[in-house]
Length: 570
Image (cartoon, rainbow, N blue to C red; front, side):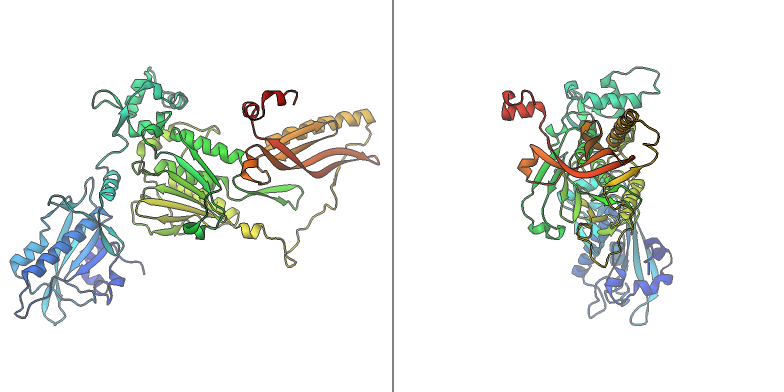
């Protein structure tokens, strides 16, 4: 049964009395509900002052915790076993002291008394404290230093200094994006990013702005003091090297040859690469790396209708959205990078900062179970990312719900489980799981064979030879090979060699994995030989398997490694 909302119980306690007096705390208490006794009466029926001081402390702790989270309801006068103990043993002064909540600031707590019959069958009352989430401030005690708590499930957890700072940023008590970061220096501007931004932002403007004035107007520069300073957001977006002052603002990619279940005892990484620069450069470089490397596997399946179909280890859009969301929504004040960890059976993206939503979310869920709303932590960064487009002409960020829905749908299209989310105290983890054990397993006899009409590597070409002389056939064959090469290049293939009657080509980014040291110099690619042959007055496309070895060193690196004299004539 779905629990009621705190205000529903506060407005109509009788309708939810069975819920309030549940036999165990496990049924009633949670993220939004708590209940406590108002002390036990002494033998003479009165309340001891020391016990009431403890009750008052518990009330303040609970109100602060609810206010600093997403709100809640505290019922005073009901025991952990659901027994109605009431408030009858308190005198008027004692009751008022408990109900006023005077030693807390920045709370919006409503209090009411509700008439009931207590466990002894006598008329009595309980007190109800309805707490709304605090807006723009932290609910804390008046003492020095102040104390504050936050609700996490069944517990009121004291706010540490780091948690307090995070809460201030989330509640906009401190605007991290607008906070001055470092002295402004025009030489630090990423000229390419600024030009892309100007092309979009000023497209409809009827006046000219200098670069410096534009950066000030959009909030990338602060003039609150002397001299001018980059804001944190401006540094991250428009500076060529934000890592100089914000070293945590980068992406680190790691690969481990172990299942994700063993990550606490995993071996050292077999790959380690960092992506720095402005936030748009990090995204672009990561996309380029994924497109040009063989970091993830690609499987080729025989298409029943002829030819082959590529099947990636993970959908490209799922990887891309996980990275872009981490860059756009992370908490940049936490001094940790975004970590991307590839395991044998999963890909994990760990982003500093807790996922923000208007409603409480569980610590573990999948996108099949929960739809996420767009609630940005870094509103300026996201607005700027929407102003410019990438090399494909698309904006860098989508609405969170749209992006996560595409992640889920593309994973499902490959038969993969929905993305998982793990929410920690100061981090958000997104886990994509693969099914390589199934896709790499050899076919068994019980498997249903795929119907096919190909019984050899000869594929007949219809109406190509009829009526053609030898010279005319050669001319048509040359034109067909040229068109075929153009088609392959457009589909992501690399044409290694063209000859009069055919060509050799391989798929880019799909080398045979070998030792890491070798892969930095040469890579071996599974390739195909495509030839057009004439047999007994019929034309055929002949397809054969082969392999191509390609160097991945550019000329400068090759010359530095081997010497230019060894490269002459190659």
